[in-house]
Length: 163
Length: 251
Image 1: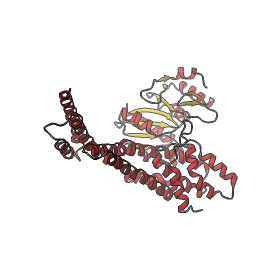
Image 2: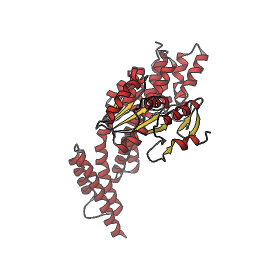
Image 3: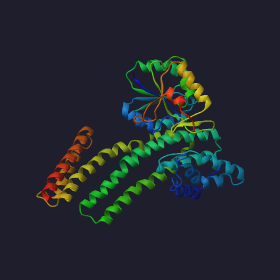
Image 4: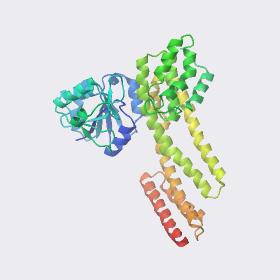
């Protein structure tokens, strides 16, 4: 089971992911799945420059990822899958490639229309609708920013009051 | 492209020293970034106060980087503004640059350079130099790299603009943290036994011989990471033993 973490985080590759989760789990590659990023070389270079040399970065589009994720899951190399929003993760889930994988909500930050549910998680009505669709796609979802924090299951999360 | 002269760039550099001056949980260094960019923005938008206000507002949103390397982003943003890069591209750039500057700066400065300089100064002090020499050595060596990084970042960001990621990937700075690991272990290995001896008072083996042994062990392990790690541990064990033995003889 070499996809170690499948995470929604709007900061994509950053210290919490690389050091917090990567050092904990032993990491060979990070795949950022994003249709815009897949087209943008200068942005890919920036994200790559934030990684230690031994960790490889991959930037497939959603369509490519649907084909690649089962391959990665069957491989030796240990990797993380990142998306910047729940929508992208839901698109993957509805293609059936996340069935054995838990989705981690790791960081969605303050933005217009979003309300704070956890210190690291701000959700809009649209985000909540996408979470419901994830649930219907029978994907396990939990919120947890760092490995030492408590994991909050989707059911509990959706019942929490926004502030 | 509206050029930004040397004076403006010098002012960006000086203002970058205050980039954390208004740090907060919502925008982190955002206000500091906006503040540091003012000399560039006022030059570029001097005929258009409305656009100036808009630019300043947009650059005071969320931003976070290693403070010393914030000049990379600062200069690249000034360059992008001077080329009138669209707001959406600028936002994407700011979001992406946070991660490489943070991880590079954390690994290089906080995890290697600062402890190395501090331990080196401590070593000099333990070897008998007056305290002000040790403090001077720390402040000089540490800030040489600190200011050097700011100037390097300003040049790199200005030269590369939006494409700075490519230059960062090839930069020697990415390999520097690994190269500093063993020197850091050497100095720690030297400090521990010497500190134990200093705390324990005079003994048969003089402090200089002890530090000689520790250094010799550490140098022997240089370039062999596995061995160096074991030697660093050995240094700690020897140091702790010396401390226990000498400490108890004092009581």
